[in-house]
Length: 236
Image (tube, rainbow, N blue to C red; front, top):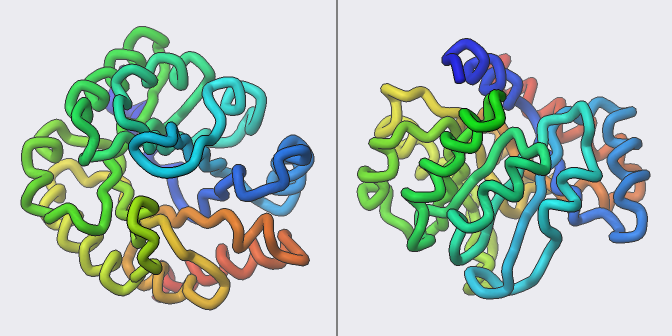
């Protein structure tokens, strides 16, 4: 896969990545269609296996069925991401993020690159980082040059509240460590209308938000508010 096509995909990773599993399960198709109508371009799939983190969510079938024409942003919160990469790549994922804390993280990052080559299209290899993981522990994985780094503001395993200010500090520190590769920097966890300014001030290129959009009385207005805050932060 050429650097040009990968760079083009990276450049599209801007703004709000909408967490679709926050929408009512029986209304996912309608929620995606509405999201596209009010300007959504990136669709985030939180994939949980009930082992690495609590909760169990959908697999590749959801990715294949939803978000045609959008960037499909798959976040694998699973114990063995390497075993799942090919399934999500074949389903149409444009971004596959695996967790640094997973035992097969290195193998999974390499598997994303291999899947991209096999399918003949760019797929971004993302690295997710839990709040308790020291940035310096990421060095071996950063050496692989991930295309995207997703910094979590909360750890779903411990129930602690999101800390977006600390996540922003960590994002900037990790971005400096990964500077030669210039990855897309993303932040996830606790992003609402009340906290979007803090999240946007982190310097993130991409911000994940689900319930603040799909749980709002007016999802279009909620999405517009989040997007406007991102644009204002990047313009400042």
